[in-house]
Image 1: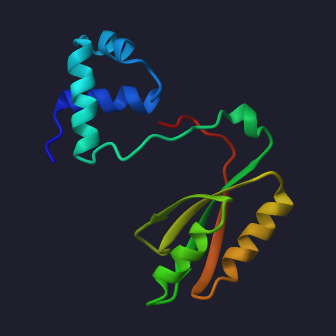
Image 2 (image 1 turned 180 degrees about the vertical axis):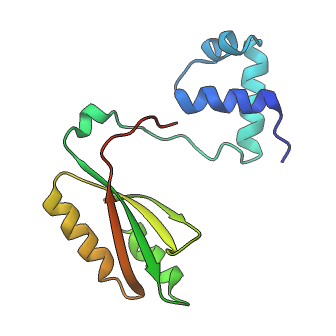
Length: 143
């Protein structure tokens, strides 16, 4: 997959607002609308753009608790742990990481009590050795 500097700029604009019109993107990038549409179609066809999603505004989840939950997994249990975490809607993202932990999950729930329950549920998954959580105080930026 060859991604050019122009493709990177296009992807950056789409990360900000994937619903932006082709004409708006073309104006921002100083390209023709046809060129932008062709690049988007090519990036989708190549699988560079794997889909589009919804980003919920912070105000819609005002008061929700967010936490990064670091997880240590027993050897040979990774696939079943990932499957169990994927089935939990409160787990918004899951990353494999280097260091003392194997996985880092982003949990989002309405209350501290529900975060306590979520971390207990994660800790109870067969193959999870231990968890450590860090509550997110604020997001400085997200892309």
